[in-house]
Image 1 (cartoon, helix red, strand yellow):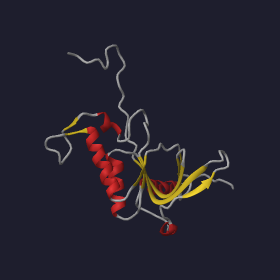
Image 2 (cartoon, rainbow, N blue to C red):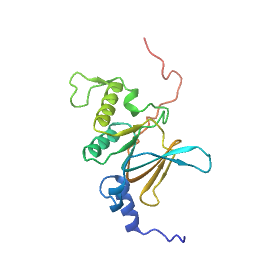
Image 3 (cartoon, rainbow, N blue to C red):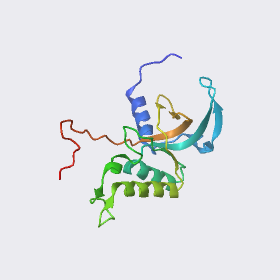
Image 4 (cartoon, rainbow, N blue to C red):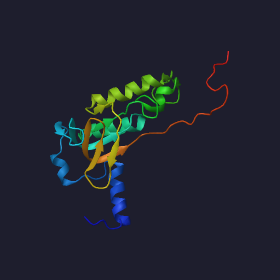
Length: 180
């Protein structure tokens, strides 16, 4: 197949799909989130194959907000929350935070880990399939998109990447020591 230079219009179309729920193809109506085992030739192990209209990569507030809205719209999203991505547990930076006092709805404050548990529970309540696996590969070169973990291959019409950020910690003598 001869690859020609990508035009701006094509890039914008892919970017619109990449960002989420704006567009889906007609073929999406036939997609479901039922799993079917697929044999991979490279490793000769069964790889679970999933199809969905929306795949979300991330586990913090943005990812779970996307999951809740997609679930309520009956898009049957799949969310990969990762496993110790950047040495942070699923839930992102909030899991490393103690008191969260600036989040609406919690006038007394809430612990970061507890807040992320509530995000996850609400996403699951509305039907989001949540997998504690790290995405190892994503193919955005053509739609539907392909998302791969060590044990799953997902084909999705839309992908929401909400992987957050990693705090940069200072590195000097005494960092991390508790002062009394």
